[in-house]
Each structure stands twice: as C-alpha cells, then as structure tokens.
Image (cartoon, rainbow, N blue to C red):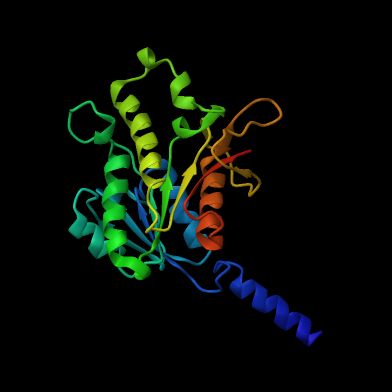
Amino acid sequence: MRQLIFVLLLLALTANAGVSGHALNIVVYGATGEVGTHIVQEALDRGHHVTAVSRNPDQLSIRHDNLSFVKGDLLDQTSITEIVTGQDVVVLSVRGVIGDSGSPMSALQYIAAENLVDVLSRQKETAPRLIHVGGSGALEVEPGVLYAATLPTILIPKGLEIEILGQILALMFYQKVDDVNWTYITPPKNFTNGPRTGVFRIGGSRALHDERGRTRVSRADFAVALIDEVEQVRHPRQQISVAY
C-alpha cells in the first residue's frame, strides 16, 4: 500500500511537467491575443515557465509565479536574440501587416518567421524549437487545392487577404528550412469559444472535418494540442492540423 501511495504521489507531481519530466522555458509571442492567451494559460497549468511577449504586455490579465512579461519587437533581430536565448521553445502566434505595400511578404507572420529562423539558425544546437501558429488558408481542402484559393477575395478585407497569403508564404519558407526545429500547427476554418475538452484530432496538411462536415476547434483545445506538441516533439519540421 505504501508503494502504491508513493507511485500515485510521484505521478501527481510529474503530470504537469511534460514528458521530459521537467518544466520547460517557453516564449510566447502574441501572448495577449485570443489564441496566445490560451497557450500561455495551458503552459502554466502544466507547470512550465512562460515568457509572455507582446507589444503591450500589460494587456495580459493572467498572473502566475511562473509567468514573466516582456515587451518585444519581431522586426528587430537583436530584441529577438535577447528574448529567445536560453529558452526551450518559442511559440509564434501573431497577426498583422507591416507597411502599405499590399504584398503578402508584408504580413507580420511571414516577416516574423524569417527573423526568428535567422536568429535561431545562428544559435545552432542551443536554439529553442519554434512552433508557428499558422492559418487555415494553408490547409488543403482537396489534393493540391488550398482553402485560401476557395475564398471569395472580393469580400475579404485587403489586410486579411495579405495575412492569409502571408501565412502560406511562411509555411513555404519553413519547408525549405532544415537547420531549425520548427513545427507549423494549423487551426481549422472555425475557432470557437468552447471549453477545454482535451478531445481532438491531429492531422497533416488536409483540413479535418467532423461527421457533420464541420471543421472547427475551440481555442482552449487548440492550446492543448499545441502544448502537447511542445512537450512530446512528435512532428519536427512538419505542418500539422488540429480539429474535432
């Protein structure tokens, strides 16, 4: 009986520290966003240490002993280097368009991907993993056809169109990177505000549909899937998708 109690206590102590058995140091860019906030909370709930990076870190309402706040600039590689050095994982969950060129290359998602890879590639073996929160436009709805190609662009605001295409460019960029350990994790077409269930499916580059033809997941469950990948390292240098 004493041995059983000891085992149960040991499991309770280690259950929230990831499969590696110790807390990870995780940087989250875009920590105050709708998805980033859930990622931060999920990581903290599992016992990890989180550095929340945002242009406005005061907007994050979460408070925790394992949480630190920092203001960062993804356009500045010196800032990136200072923040990510010595970390285990960097999560990129940002949106935006820089300038008014109208080019998909001006999407912050793409610019940030390039800058992060530049910094991490120079750090070689000591570099943290990079987890990129992608866009559903990069998912295939049938072989060779991306969801983005099926959207009625005349109805989409120009800024959003740039972001959608920028996310696709970011994925294409990553697919040529072999000196950084990246994973591109793609949400489905529809995010919901539903609860954390811990029940979902992991796919590849194809959009996942449920039995009713819907493709959706709650932000809370998407965060569960992302932190699972952080801990388990199952899909290095791959695109994966999450949906019910």
